[in-house]
Length: 482
Image 1 (cartoon, helix red, strand yellow):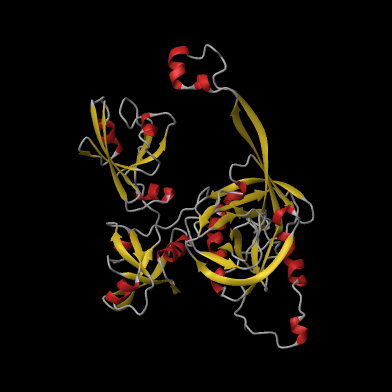
Image 2: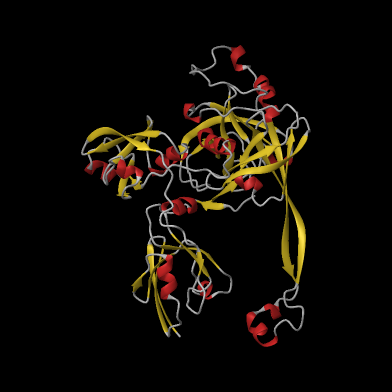
């Protein structure tokens, strides 16, 4: 189980689990259905069994294996201080390395007849071997086709070698409504395939903190460790979500589970089908913020909802679509936008190419703009460099921040300058407590616009260093005297 996130005394746990078995053939798009209460005793006694029999065969268990290394034994003479005087002459400085195999269990859903399986990123993260086991006990070796950490989704492929596999087509999660009955199928605690039922508690839950795209289906269907990557299905057999996380104090289900919407999963699967090893997402080219009650009142909005544009990248897609600072985006392709996370989710469910219809409010008037779906530009070039020499920044791996790199790292795509990508252990940069994501602003009073200027600024040793670094929303100023 991956690292927990504490929130209001509860732990947000990513849970491994077998995805719900899905139909032997794909279900077509569901037509609009009437929602009503049971009208008779016979209807109350209806069973989920026919549905489960139809969909369960496409639910799979995912077993992963990886080799981990750990150094044990004496490490005193591995200290740089001792090595300076004694080197490695004693021959036991670093201890000995122990290798052991680590196994884990998760779930997946077969989503195409040629053997594509979707699961969670954290189920297969770092795996050396992946095995997919069907409910009929057939097993297949699988390879990782696409791993998208930003959505916590991954796509595997199994060599079907002439075998027929049950599979399920991804449904439209936008049709889901609060109160709809859903089933969660997985392998909790490795007890075997298990089906639980519940209702949809929310369809756009944000602030969960599991992935970069925080827009989840919340359900009270019991989800436990072992369910991650499992399927959330409706009573007409549509796969509408990939079970991912729970809020829990004990590690078990307390009726608050989260699933990644199928609309987001479809983008990852489509990218894998197209042969890409990553998901190329559209770039908005603007930064937004929530609409508070005070902002809504000042802009004469009916309610505090939408995404307020606070900054626009010059010549970016938003700028070319005539989107301006102060505009409030209230809908994307007819889907309402309550906050910036919802806007990010809607953009994240689209692939590069084509257009997007945005509904905005400006000066009390509502109008539409068309956004071209293009990828973030790789400008300026990254110029990835490891700083060497005798400066406090030695050992830092840095790069020019472009919109494309910012999109890849999940940071502000409108930022510019030099960003820290990594810091070598034991280096001056680590002793300075520099961290990945820091932006180097100034060195000895000189503004740092790009990597080349940073290289020149630290080329020679100096008796005194004045550094300015931005970390998140803070600017840190450091003075180091030699």
